[in-house]
Structure formats: C-alpha cells, structure tokens
Image 1 (cartoon, helix red, strand yellow):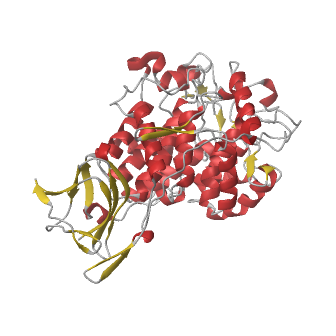
Image 2 (tube, one colour; image 1 turned 135 degrees about the vertical axis):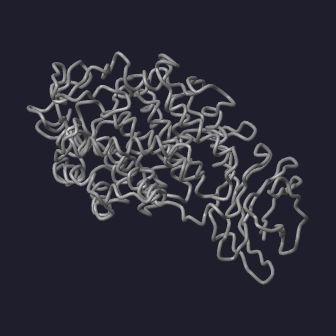
Length: 544
C-alpha cells in the first residue's frame, strides 16, 4: 500500500496539531433528529422505528461528497475540492472507501433508487477508472501506478527485471498484480450492481474474478500451481509485496459475486491457500495480521531498506523494533472488518486482542488506535488511518462505546459547516485533504449497515418491490424509504423543502398514500409509474 501520505511532513504536523486542539470548544451546529412513529392503515400497524433510517446530517454529507464526484460538478479526471495534490498515491483509496460508506447509506433506504444515488455511484466508478491515455497525470492510473515514484510497469515474476519465457508480466495496471486497484474497482462495480441491478458491469466484474482465479490457481502461463503465480495464494499490490488487508477486498468481492450470480469460486477453494498464508504465516506474536510480505525483491527506491527482509520471500520488517515484522492498526482493522464474512471466528477472536494492543486512551471519552504497538509513544498519519478504519470494525462488532470514543477523537476539533443542502467538517486550518475523508468516515460510522451486511445479495424478489425510481431530489430529504413485503406497504419518511414529485415504479395497482392512517391524496399515473406530488412539510407515509 502506498506510503506517500507518510512522507508528507506537513500532513503529519497538522494532524498532530489537531490533537492539541481537542481541548478547545467549537460551536458545531446541532444535528437534526429524524422522528419515528406508529401508523395504522386498514388495521395493519407500521412502526417506523423498525425500518432503516438516516438523518439530515448524513444526507447533507452525501450531498457534499456528490459535489466532488458527480459529473454534474466536474469531469472524471478533475479533482477540484479534493485537496490531494500532495497525495498522488491515495486518490483511489479515498474513492473506494467512499463507495463502501455510501453503499451503507443506500442500503439503509433501499426503496430510494433515483439517479441521485445511482448516478453518484456510477460516476465514482468512472472516476476510479480514469486512464493515463485520456487524463494523463490527472488519472488514477498515473497517480497510483505509473507515477515516477512507483514505476511499477517494468515488473515480471519471478525474474523481476530479466525475464524469459517462463516469467509472467506483472507490471500491468489491470493485473495480474495491482490488487490494490483491481480489487477495489471490482468491488465498487459489484456494490453498484448489488444496489441498482443494471447488469451493465457484470462482464467486467466477471473478467476480474476469473483473472484472480487464474492468478491464484495457476502459474499464469496455463499450468496448475499450488499457491498460484506468487506461491502464497495472495495477489500483490505493488508487484513485489502482498498485504492481507488489500487481499481482503477481492476475497470479499468473490463472496459477493458468488452470492449474486450463483457461482462457486469460494467453494472451489480459490482463496484457500491465501487465507491459510494470511492466518498462519502473516501473523505477529499475538496472532494478529502483519503488514506486508515480500514475494520477490523490489527494485527502485520505494520501500526503505529498514523494511526489507533478510531474504525473499519474507515479511516486511518493523521500522522501530529489530527482527520483528511490521504491524499496523489500519491493516488489522481493515482486514478484520472485510474478512469477517468469510471467517467470522477469526475476527471475533482477534478483535479484543487488537483492542488490547493498539487502542490508546486520550481521556475518559476519547481514544485512538496507535499505528503500531512497536512505537507506542509516536503519533502520526497512520494513527489517524488506523482510527478511521476502526470505525467500521467497532460498529460491526457492536462495540459502540469504543466507536463513540474514536469519533470523539477524530471529529472533536472540527466545525460542521452547512452550505444550503450540503455539510462538511471544516479541516482547512489543519489538513484540507481530511475534509472528504472525514465526510465519508462519518457515514461509515453512523449508518446502521455494516461491511458484513453488504456481502449478502438481495433476494430475487427485491427487484420486484415498489421503489422510488425518480424524484425532485434537490427538494427532498428522504429519511426512510422501504417496501415491507410482509405488510405490503411502502414506508416513506420524507421532508420536502419545495413542492416536489416522487415517482414510484413496480406498483401493480393504483397505490394510495396514507398520512396519519388516512388517505392523503391521489397519485397520478405516468408511463406505467405512479407520481406523488408533495407540498413543503414533513411526512410519514405508508403507501399501499
């Protein structure tokens, strides 16, 4: 994984300043609450507290992120408002984890699938796939792979720089190596199909999954090989090193792909050797994941000499302690969260150990995750990253006390700034690059959906449920939107700023919106869909 962020001294300094500022008092705007209630329609009771709900702050943060992603505001190869000029190796990570966070938002209101959400997700994927041919130095391909600081394009395996007919080219941006991009890109597309079921991305997802299968079960030249091309059952990020956390993404993607399309890649044992290597070889003294395992010698000047093993293959070594492998909180938090679907016992067993050795108390209501227990007195960029990734893990584990303490630490020094229908955390005086990161981090931490939840496919019947297919999105706040298949009613909790229309698809009869248990008004039919027009106000509706 890229270390460009750690090399930026300005970022390190400003993050440390944020800790100093935690003792100050800031006038953050109060977050609006989203009311729930009980509605009875024709003798059937609908308890709104039993359905997924989001609030205005979460929606306003999404609206802010939309200005960074949507083609309505900027082209795919443009980065206005990202403040990432000095972080060329991190753009794709921000895009990917932003996608995972907003996918949880989409899942919370599954009956709201207008272009406001679908278009954002589509544009996010297109931004992730910007190529050097089209966008030059503004492309993800250049920032993440062909940038002079990396120059990964010349690699082969096993002879990195002196290939012959028995060597596999591993310098391609789209693989077979570079799982730190291919894994995220495929998962982003998979979550898009899980959320919107368009079918347009299935072929490309399938290509990546099959390419991983080839890399993991053959020598890359058509011959079966235990452990695959690199003999460890895992796929490198940089062409010469594998990481558990980065491979957790394609493992998770493979699980989701099998669930959505009825394939048996996981059952075939495609990832068995890699999981065995991660669980038995890439382990520290506490049986937690270590951060990196070199499968061949690197060339160039990317990793410091202190991190290199004495012989290859071998673990990445600690920068702080002699003869110990590198460990990091971001590695374990990320890997434990995404691998829980595949090996829940491992995550359950490791979580308290992870907390014991990485969590550091700041005060009674604040804590953060140390970058590494091998440097307990240090503080820097990776302590922040470890804390951010731990938001998803602690929520998934139901450890809401630690989750809140982490959030107090990460967000306590930043004002919430509202601009119309948008909100962000103001990090400009400290580090502007944190602004979009903290926005999606908040969504990741506060929506009720976990990473593990999203690995299950939707039931086939879901795509026949009534849903919002079009709306005057700029005039409404959709807090709840969900079809209840058992009670056969659509739950809609919405606030309307200006008169707005909301279009519903998949009703097989004329639907009736009920407010306070009584019919509200008639809906109009357009091209087989049904349109509801609402004046300004707040509504808790059941549409039957």
